[in-house]
Length: 65
Image (cartoon, rainbow, N blue to C red):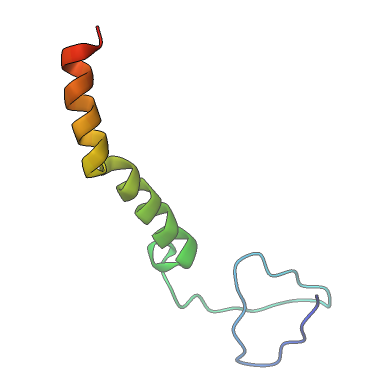
């Protein structure tokens, strides 16, 4: 849904400009964005194993060959 912006309003990545020239000032680094933080958290959660998964892996090494 289109939202009108005026001088000094914030715009976000992916903003579609429909009226003419747009002059913006970057206020955050790419590593400080919400999407960047979500990517980091998903990566970290994939590296950590749940305690039950560790237990299953220990038994699997012994009983499944």
